[in-house]
Length: 394
Image 1 (spheres, rainbow, N blue to C red):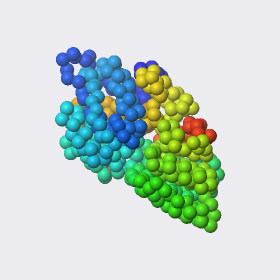
Image 2: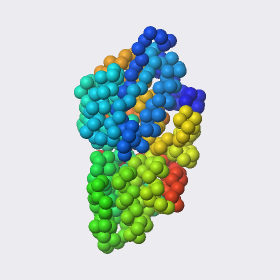
Image 3: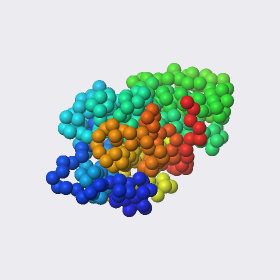
Image 4: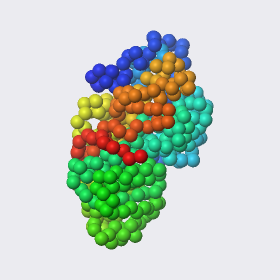
């Protein structure tokens, strides 16, 4: 993907001055980015696109002279979607000379790999881990994520549902498998109560990711004194679609809203003819994104790989390379301490996923533009517009 596809390079923070300090020398060893991510298993759909997004960004940098006068190379090690195997995959790419480590698009699934990289004093970047604990508080000072965090997403959707759709009462159904969804649910509840009042938050129930039935949860929802205008489904494929299917089979046809975890249509076969569901994510892979830079990225992705991304999380992979390459260039070195200092000085730095800010204590962004997509008649990708959270509860 050439920079010209995005208009000006500066619009994405990739001005030529950020890419190289001189002509690339043939005898220079490449800079190695080690990706310890899920190449197989249930989490692979969330890592596949970001990995390819990184490859696009690396190709752009390399053909513009490289980084610090050197070419960039990416290597992979498969975590197999196994939380426990993440540390092994991280050590594998480190042993092969990684100068920076990229980990899976989730705090729980990427945390072990990031912890290993952090302990070796290497920058550990997640493409889209959305829990705010991905950073100094949960991993260490070298851990950063390109995600727009779960609190920002949840607040955005609460505001959209209340202010744009006029829905007044809400109920949350939480899958307890990962921290991302727990944070999403808690923030949605706080923001909804701020907007609609405590009496209009009708409650929350939970289920485990391995649960095959949510019959008792459905019974409790149907037994409420008044039925909610919407149900928030804090879960993700592959287990989440079963819960949705059971809700609909029980006659609970209220609007469903959810996070970026429901991006892509790879899971829709499990819920035939699903309608009245709305999700928030980074962009629309379905050709309905109103933003030229997103359209250009998805076209370049299609041209390069012969298919659209599985999800729009691909944008975050490109953004990781943008952010890290700028920090390296500004530092003039790959030295982790100096690169970390540059990252922590970011203030609204342009990236494909939006303005990016980091501080010493916060290595995630909470308020960026995101797109709301609707699912109707089994078809994903109906654009409801691009929005940003007005307020994010602490």
